[in-house]
Image (cartoon, rainbow, N blue to C red; front, side, top):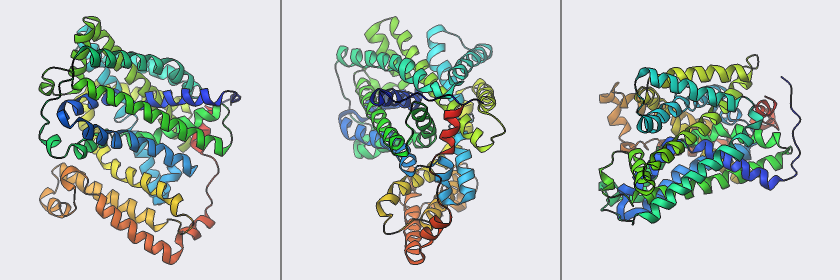
Length: 466
């Protein structure tokens, strides 16, 4: 396909602001909309420690994922190949499928239908669900068709509309209804910051952060950010600005949760926010809330189609970007047609398995530049990543009830296993062992000399040329 001529960066500051808005919108799906209000409601008088914990995991981790890819100057596949060629291929493919057609992408359509369309218009049933998802994903496909213009599509148009509606909802709800924090629920009473941390962890946006890096780098390159230094600095700045905006919106939504009477009677944040909109704006409130949900889901869907299609074109160059985009759109319609519960039942174990190695990879990538003058990681990466994979796999298998009698006693030896964090200590021990081996053998230095990294990301090149 023809390669467009990139525009010059005459206004780099404005470009980064637009890129930041684009990145914010790709992260801010419907799930990110409904989690924070429930944190605010459940935390009650322990609001601030709970929210700070949520922001640490729900904002900081995704931002660090993008920073990790940016400072490495490599693609997600190359980055994950630090765990070995097999790990690099399998992890990157599974990550893109998880945030693409197998979970996050069909979820955008399913959530839009069940949270926005059915309450507003009363449409429900198999036919209505199918028609809506076909329309929804075809619009997303059209918006993602020219990936090097996604920065304008999302950053200049859709995201400002989304942010404006969110500000209206948060401002009216926060000032129209008095804040009335209730007694914290049991978990938030004893350890509010840790519980908030777990809620942010459960957004599992770190995987999306790794995947979205391809979009932000490719978009900046198409706008004239050509040198490695300008790309790295621009990507990190955009990630930090997007993270700050995410944090502000999350804080506002959590605050709104504390303004709703009897808030702890709600089972999720969707009906809570819908009622907040109705209380503050009357009959137009449901329309505003539905518009927020649809915009949040649409911007995320566009980002997911773009990033997954660019990655798989890089992986299989003979199959072009637009073919992959059509394929993932069709698969998303098929999965979303089954409904939200079906999507979640299939995907949750898949996502749960991927998250520990994703966080381990991010952490080690950020640590490596700090100690690079003393040691280059080789076995540190490999032992830590494979232990995180093994522990995560065993935990998911046990959670499904397969061999739980034999596995649970072993897994429970690790601190934090009861809250799905048992992988941390074994992974840290493996990393320390690998570090000792690397210092003793200089394996990392030898590997780096034999396999110098490419200067540019093949994935970002694919995106910029699509």
